[in-house]
Structures are given as C-alpha cells and as structure tokens.
Length: 63
Image (cartoon, rainbow, N blue to C red; front, side, top):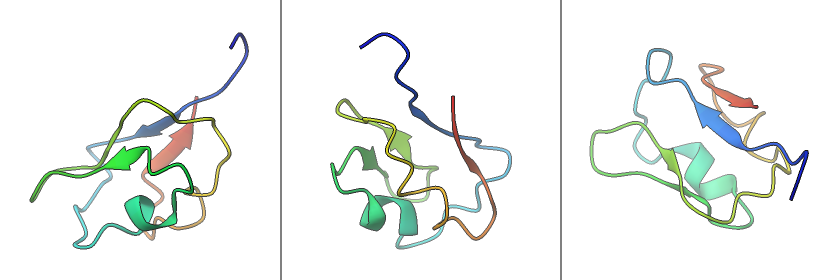
C-alpha cells in the first residue's frame, strides 16, 4: 500500500537480545530473529509501531 511505513532494525544499534522483545511484541509476527543475529522484518509488517517502544537500545525505526 502506498505510503505505508515499515519497520527497520539498525544492526549497528541492535544488541541481539535473546529473546528479542521486538519479535515478541509484534502482533503480526513480522519480526523474526535467527540465533545471535539482529531481528529482520518478514513480510506482513503493517507499520503499526508496536515494536518501537520495546527495544531498550532504540534500534528500531519506522521508515
């Protein structure tokens, strides 16, 4: 959809928490995480922003 924002995780700011609070907080389960890696956005992100307040390192943005 035109104008819809998506989640972006900055790998430089991310500390690769285990478990990642972003993957737990996403109502669409669009954020996934491989072991010892930064989370990434899978298809289905609707830009709701539920993950923004969950990252203790402020590594997630809506773009």
